[in-house]
Length: 254
Length: 314
Ligand SMILES: Nc1ncnc2c1ncn2[C@@H]1O[C@H](COP(=O)(O)OP(=O)(O)OP(=O)(O)O)[C@@H](O)[C@H]1O
Ligand SMILES: [Mg+2]
Image (cartoon, rainbow over all chains, first blue to last red; front, side, top):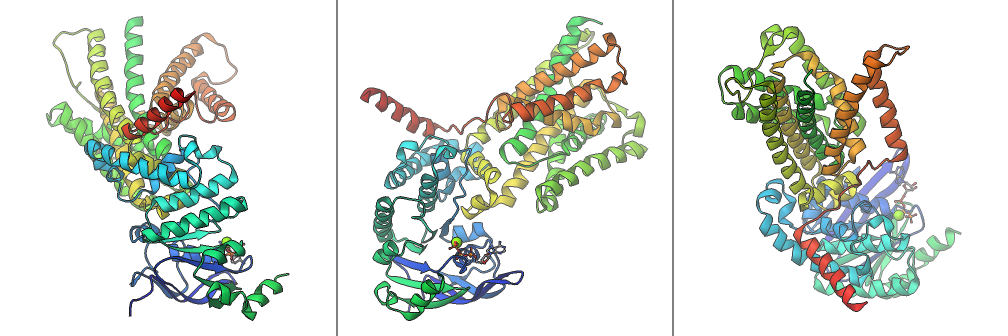
């Protein structure tokens, strides 16, 4: 049997006395959209940062495409095809929207010191194609008009969209999105999810944290529910909705 | 003193320090590395040049060797120092510069200790006047400046420069987008040190000596003022900064002879430098020229194509 794209096995991460992630195990299968929900502070972002290599898990292992990534540096994890869009956008604010996209481009020849000086013709040619790709993705999130503006001029919602677009630009096998629809109007939020779903036919799998459950549940094929650092429920959205554990988590929060 | 010679001398200084300012711009302006030990690499270039030129090696090989040795030191110190937080990096390299100066000062066998050693000029024409000598130096210095400018400018406007700027803006995000930040920083530090090494060699052969006193920490701070004043991440800006700071330095030096001050006049220009830097940081934190955007052929094409169609539509 084929192994899942991402396997998380008994992963824990604590900050001082706070067990932000406490013995989480879950799988993300290849294809489509997998959701992760849970109340504020349940450990979703911490789990994502641990997958990305920004935190080293205190316990447990993470496998991506069957290889263990728990001890890799973030840039190595990117190289394997696992990319992330941060909950709070981390843009390169002094740079243009297009340059933000191009930083994320995979396999740009001119990224290397000597190539940048001595293979100019080659990377210039490659960059033309990358710019076209970047503009196409920016169009999906309605940012193409801002391509040449500094990222610092974008509104909060637009920054969020650029963060997502930058993730797509990296042509990931698995893209982690931390609340992509937060701060974006619901109509655009839904249309973004629709576009992500379309994008997943090109071989990108999405693992998405989202507080807007109605949108997420419409598009996700599987959902995990986290509470206090643990996964408490998992299943298809229509099943999860009726799961008492899911209810408890969300009602208990109030 | 011959006023023309004074001007020619000023032009040489602007060229040499312009090169150092470019090297700091590469490290700080583009890659965000606060190198407070710039003078260390300037010193290494100068002493390498001085010692090698005594063996009769041609001057261009001495310059290149100075750049290489400076680059090696840059790499060696950056490997441990770059793992530290930015402010610790600053302290480590600052201390490194002082330690090097104290070593060449107290170890006579290296290069004459406090007395230094004399260095023969790179190009000496028989029977040439001082003015001609200065002109020859201007040619040599500005040729090197041109090469260094070209390298830094090409890097700044390439995907490599884009990655460096991204690391400066947010190193965690850049790393998560596949940029090995440790590698980029070490390379920027190495290249910056090499360029400062070239400037050091030029300085040694222009002054025809190396002395420990030429490499006080103040040199580092002067170069910082050039970069901050002119505009970090703008290569034209830092050259402008180099010119202005040299002029300012000379002006303050001259003014000392005419002013009667209640303080030790020898430190006047340092006080003025301090005031200048506070003024710049308060009122024009981006420097005189703001950061230059990344220009590659492909980007210009995409941009130009767009504005052309926009004009047609309107
Ligand atoms: N760097 C950190 N240092 C200390 N504590 C942290 C850190 N990051 C997260 N925490 C704590 O870990 C817990 C989980 O936080 P996390 O951000 O992962 O939650 P979340 O599920 O993403 O919440 P939200 O829905 O609000 O984004 C919280 O109690 C938080 O205070
Ligand atoms: Mg979160």
